[in-house]
Each structure stands twice: as C-alpha cells, then as structure tokens.
Amino acid sequence: MTMMWTAAFRSAQVSPYESMTLIYPSRGFGNETLRQVVRVRGGGDRLRVRFSNLYGKQPLTIASTRVAALESGSSIIATTDTAITFDGRPHVTIGVGAEAVSDPVDFATTAETDLVVSTYYASETGPATYHPFALQTGYVARGDVVSHPKLPDPAEVESRFHLGGIDVWTRAGHHVVAVFGDSLADGVGTTPGADLRYPDLLARRVSEPGMSVINLGIAGNRLLTDVFGERGIARFDREVLAAPGVTHVIVQLGVNDIGMPGMFGLPAVPVVDLIAGLTSIAERAKRHGLTAIIATVTPFGGAAGVTPGFDTPESEEARQRLNQWIRANREFDAVADLDRALHDPAAPATLLPGYDSGDHIHPSDAGAKVVADVLFRALMP
Image (cartoon, rainbow, N blue to C red):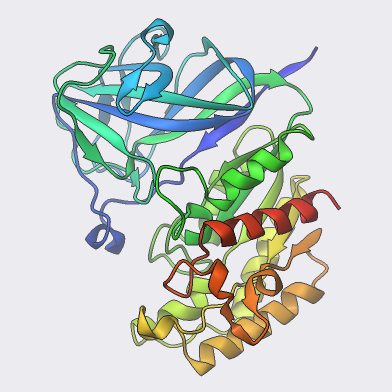
C-alpha cells in the first residue's frame, strides 16, 4: 500500500503585534512548560509536529517536546508519552519567519484522536506567534515538566502558541478538506471545549467516505485586508496549497470585509473587489487540482446592537450582491448556500433565532450543525 503524509490538524497563525491582541493577547514563555490539547483527524501509524515562528522577531528555541494521548484536563495517558525530535535532537531553534517540522515518530492515531503536545521553553521566547481563539483550554506550568502525567498547579490559556499543525502517515488517496474561513470556521458562538465548530461536525460526517478536515479559520479574518490575521488572498498558498494531502477547499470568507469597515468608519469594500479576490483563490485552487467549494455570506441583521456599524443598509446590500454572484459563478466547483440554510424566512437579513448564538452574526451549536450539513451535501453531491 502506498503511504503519504497528510495534514491532520492545522492552526492558522496570527501575529502577536497586530490589533487582535487587544482582544486576545498573546504572551511569551520562559522556563515554562506549555501543554496544548488538539484533536487530530485521520488515522495513521506515525506523526510529525509543526511549530511556527512566522511572526516572531527573534529566533525561537524549544528545549524539548513530547506528544501523548489526552486523559483529561492537563493530564496525559503516561504510557503513551513519546519524545519528539528534530534532526535527531530534542531541541530546535526556529528562525524568524520560519517553521520547523519534527522527525517522524511512531504514534498511532484514528479518525478522531485527542492528543497533547507539551513543549518546554528554557529561555525567553518574546511574544509568541499564535492562534488567538482556540476554544480549547491549554495549560502552562513552571519548569521542565513535559513528561509529568499531570501538570503541577498549571495556569490556563485560551489561545494556541507556536503549534502550527500535525501530519499523519496514512494511505495515499485519503482526501483532506481544508476549511478556509473566518470566525464561523473558528467556532465563535459554539460551546468552548466541545468541538462543535462546523469543521468538527463536518469531519464526523465525512470520515466514513474516507475524508478528514483541517480548520484554517481565523476569527475576524478578511479576504482582502490585514486586520485580524493576514488577509485570505495572501495566506491561501501558505496554509492551504502547502498542506500535504489537501484535495478539497471550502472558502468561507467575506462577511468581515463587508461589515467591519462600518465598525471603524472606513469606506466600504467594493463588491467587485471581493469577487476578484474570490476568483483568484478559485483559480489557484484549480491550478493545484483542488476541488473548491464556496459558501455564501451568512446573515448579520440585528448585529448593530452588539457590534455597532457592522449591520447597515449598505452592508446588507453588498452581502446580497456578493451572494448573487456566488450562487451564479462558475469559478468554483460547488456552492454551499449557508445564507439560505440559516436565515429566518420571515426576516431574510437575519439568522433564524434557533441558529443564532446571540450576537446575530455567529451561528449557535445548532446553527453550526446546519452549516456542516450543507457543506457535506456540497462535498458529496
């Protein structure tokens, strides 16, 4: 059987120096152990771990790394605790703007496996390249305690730091779906720690047909502007096209380009520019042989009371115009009409109350399930 590396987990990286840090601050580490819980999708006999210093301003040194199966909280199943090396060494130094990929290690995973990655930082790291909105608690303890079954008196953190991804060694022909999106993909509005983001729910639906899903959502991300994370048209190649084994991409971006300018008193983004940006992504996906699915922009009527300036007559008109193009376009292989699935038939500019998390922008757990169902049908017509 032919085998290959495939992306089994991804965490899109954000700079600790941008405006998002006012809401979800990053941090540095020094003489500390960081334990991060991740859910890996896709079974294999070996894995490798990726660490990012994409936005660091100094070289990053990780003194030691281990991976284990999760027991609960900050506790690992001690019998699974396994050392991770880099070119045969336990430590690695990652240059500014670079990524490090570990040596392969024998560690069996299934279609859905909860892993713990523990890293010890002996020296000061400076502000960490990170993923602000993890919806999964991590743990920090003093000293080198990477192999402790349970961390002693840990502090909790709500972001991911430096951990860019995990790959598994699996059979060739396994399909990987990259969800390339914003806060809806990132899980804003769903229950923390429950893995109820729509990419999680979609992953459970597609595991039987032999597919897995990686989540490349960033809360607040925009297609054309660097505000919360690097703009979509700039990060697409690095995050989607470079991920090993990716065969499909779901593009779910645009709502922040439409709504955010009003929040900050900035000019509206022309819909024609959004169309051009989405078209460029479709063209790049096609050149690399990916099946590309685009999602319509979901309703946000009523958000003005929670997020002033986001919901205006002008932004709703732009949403309708962009969705009209999305539904009719021929650049993408399929359309997932999330707007029609989530809107209130009695008030189409708003989310159906049962699907609304309460801020009138982000779907609830029930809404996320509807999104996953619509995407599944687009993937499996």
